[in-house]
Image (cartoon, rainbow, N blue to C red):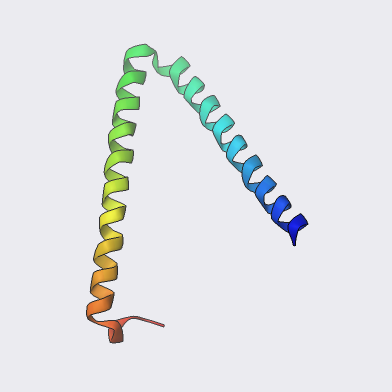
Length: 77
């Protein structure tokens, strides 16, 4: 069990490191293509997108939970 836990944890760690490296490489590529000012605009738009998506997804979770608790018979099983 401990070996499996360590293996799964290592897999998650490697996945996150590879994701970070890929994101960094993509950002470098976009920076070279766009230049400094358009890159700043892109990063600002991306920051707003992530902010609103985070807030929106949290609100939807609450909404779905509330509606499900009001009418549990309509929930699909």
